[in-house]
Length: 91
Image 1 (cartoon, rainbow, N blue to C red):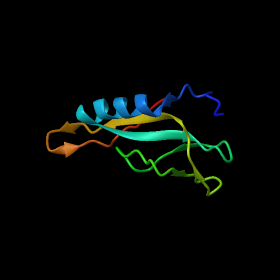
Image 2 (cartoon, helix red, strand yellow; image 1 turned 180 degrees about the vertical axis):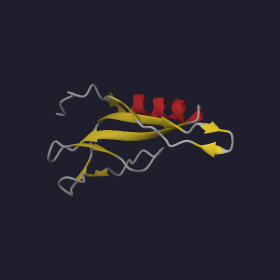
Image 3 (cartoon, rainbow, N blue to C red; image 1 turned 60 degrees about the vertical axis):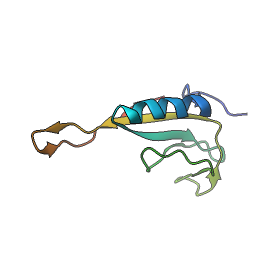
Image 4 (cartoon, helix red, strand yellow; image 1 turned 90 degrees about the horizontal axis):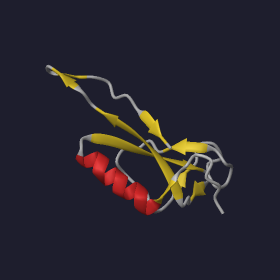
């Protein structure tokens, strides 16, 4: 059983939050704990939830977590320039 020291959320809740955030112009990265080595990881593909599992950068194995966190960012346009994205972590 997964421990939840990061206050992660179940898949159904994460997917609903992702949909809401993306529809409001945010980019979302999924955060998860590797069930093999325990390392906290962040997906490097914005706005995508992988049902086939996540690869851990620490141990190299595929992990299939059941609870997740997320990080969000929004691009801000000032004039004709887009400012850098700033990722804010949640969970």
